[in-house]
Amino acid sequence: MTKSPLQPVVVGAGPAGVRAAQTLVAHGVRPLVLDEAPRVGGQIYRRPPAHFQRAAQTLYGFEAARAQAVHSAFDSLQNQIDYRPDSLVWNAQGGLLDVLHGPTQTTQSLPYQQLIVATGATDRVLPIPGWTLPGVYALGGAQVALKYQGCAIGQRVVFMGTGPLLYLVAYQYAKAGVEVAAVLDTAHFSDQLAALPAMLTQPAVLAKGLYFVAWLRAHGVALHSGVRPVRVLGHGRVRAVVWHDGRQERTLDCDAIGFGYALRSETQLADLLGCRFAFAPQQRAHLPERDAAGRSSVAGVYLAGDGAGIMGADAAEWAGERAALALLADHGVAVDAARAERLERKLQRLQTFRAGLERAFPFPVGWAAQAPDELVVCRCEHITAGELRHTVQATGADEMNRLKALSRVGMGRCQGRSCGVAAAEILAHATGKPVEQVGRLRGQAPIKPIPIHLVHASAAEVQA
Image 1: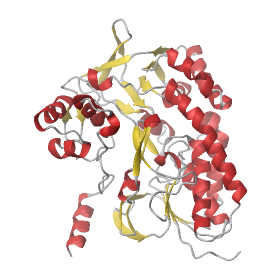
Image 2: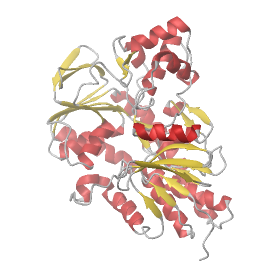
Image 3: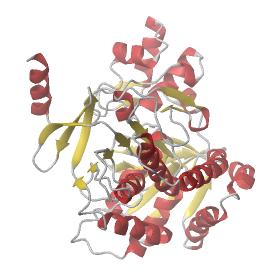
Image 4: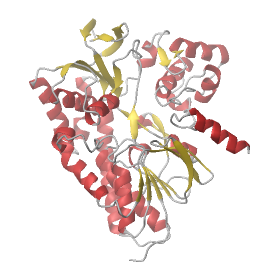
């Protein structure tokens, strides 16, 4: 096969990134794959260290076969791609990607002409008083500890929030022998019943979720729905959580909490690349625009997987392949058009199920109204809900970046990745505007923390 002159870059090596790379290789193209993690798999199929021996069934449960398939696909590509693990893309501009290489703590600028962005997702967090105590983790963080590090976040753990991940992580912890004190879900049982027709469009996926719930119940784990988290108690460490069950406040002893409200897309890189964004009501977020094939509004930039909208691991694999096919076709490489159409149809069919999930595990839209003034929203800059409300009242700020400039919310290490959702909800409630009208925090480099000496070095290069 004649090699194509294309030299695309794939950012991310989860399901979307691996399938994109595999598709490019199958068409004679050698891509550069940049992976922030030390090993492939992304969050859902995160691969543990080579010396960490645990059976795939133990690590991935029902998804063991798919995880192994993704891992095997990647292993078969090793000699046909330029794979760079521990490589964080922290900036993008002028056709260059600034990349931090973890082991050496050095950064370099890599040119690109074609780019597939498969940056995945992270936890969507809505804080409550006490959430900054040691022992409180995002659901994804709790899962990383178990999958990648082989340890639990505590001995008696409460899982709280809503979304399918809530029950999956609780099941994984209980299955590993950890005492799960309770699962506290803000969604109501009536929400799940109302969503059932849409969720039946993917019966196998629905069956897995029902199994997790049934297994937890059968093993004595208390499951509470329709709750409102109130506060975390403790001095120097979590000792209990307080929630409202609709009638009264209840307190439960625990030494760790995993919490989150489903997932949100990692869109900062797409933002720096200049992609056009639009509000997606179903996901209650501003997302980069893309067509059915994954093309963004920027020529040469393709979007795939949860980084462009939460759809799950299966959809990420299909979207990664479809984006790669689009890239190839756009640059004159012959591709299987029928396969491309099938992938688009599969992705389209998932939309109904995705809508069902949002109905079954709705975003708690009343959160901002109940957040007390003393609640720390931005932990990096220690900005409270009351300070945000005061800023709105005193200055008339009604847009997220204006609020950021006046209050410093989102200016810390996380760049708003943790606090942005909560701050937008506070702003929307304080101004009486729909959340889609208050905007979003613009991506700023570095999109994730990097060593300070590298920031100084980059600034010096710009001045020179």
